[in-house]
Image 1 (cartoon, helix red, strand yellow):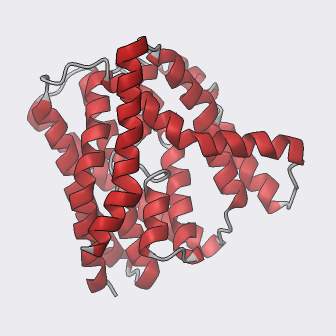
Image 2 (cartoon, rainbow, N blue to C red; image 1 turned 90 degrees about the vertical axis):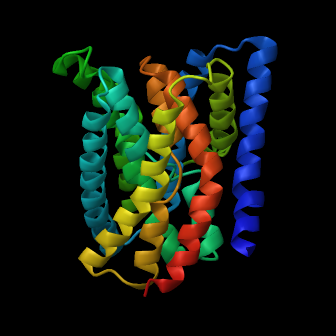
Length: 307
């Protein structure tokens, strides 16, 4: 019960308040969602990842373990969602929209606070979540961009689009600067820090603005399918992979917990930026965030049985 209250008060209620403010702003002022999406996609998101990676203390051993887990987990998710896509008979952009709503999950502004709460700020557990966040940020800016454009652009156009994305360069730059202990001057670091701190509020407000545009009566069964795959099936797969790799202790628990978080805002940003089922993507993010209060609590309670 204590986990339920903590997650509700610390994560879900604040997120829902900011989303609701976005809905109200949209209803009152008819905001331009495409402009807000571009700010998130090309400024707030890459800066957040750069700042987090530059500050994180991640060892090579942790990186290898998490990478092995992530590759297997990503492959299993792709296989699972592909089966569902064929079963449901999705066509065109809906295939990539469903896929993105399951394989892209909120490792940053939901996963990191959740990790801090469950593991009491344990630096080792946090470093695992930071790596998962890095990999999850890289995916939408490479595979995600390819997936939402594959049905309407050729490969050369898609590669050109990917190479224009700042996150693709921010991740290696952060590792290089941190690896060679290069200090960032204060006049540069402060604005980067301010932008990173503003990511969560601006991203959730943008989600609210997008929700203010949509018609809620459409494709609710598709949203429910996405939520089940993301919130219930995904942590089960994560648990099985942990057993397969022989991982134990905090490493195993942190990795399982990292797979239980709701759909990432990145799936919505991709959908809005490239006009690929934005209504479905927004519903999937919003509903999975709400229902995660139940599913994440169950996953946390089950972690006590992981040794």
